[in-house]
Image 1 (cartoon, rainbow, N blue to C red):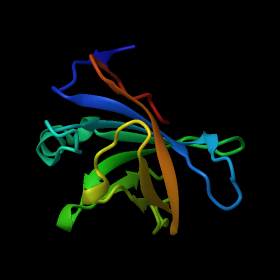
Image 2 (image 1 turned 135 degrees about the horizontal axis):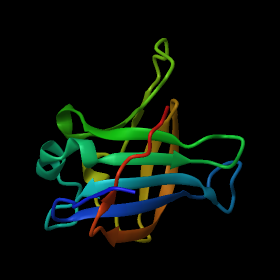
Image 3 (image 1 turned 90 degrees about the vertical axis):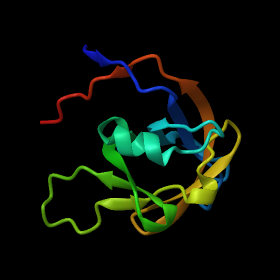
Image 4 (image 1 turned 180 degrees about the vertical axis):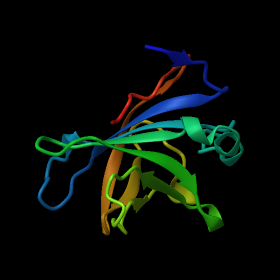
Length: 142
């Protein structure tokens, strides 16, 4: 497996589905893994993102039979973040989810973040954050 040295202050952030209707205890089998840059205040760093967009990746995971989905982290006007999913379906109009808002962009263990997924808002709990000393190369997704 090839690796890439990360830019300074890149982190792996693990999110798990928090309590919601249908999941009264939450669900550790559903969530997101983010590879994101942080600034000195531990907020998502737009400067680091702009310089290293290709490294800012997201994996959405869910229990079988669902398959992992992969996305790129994007920044929208007004400071909003979005998740731009890779799709093999050229007709898919819904290939982007709403990510953390600017005021939610501090992702520390125990905190919560809302992400809109396929038009439905879900809340996730940050369960793990670790600084990266390398970034694994992306798998070939034929």
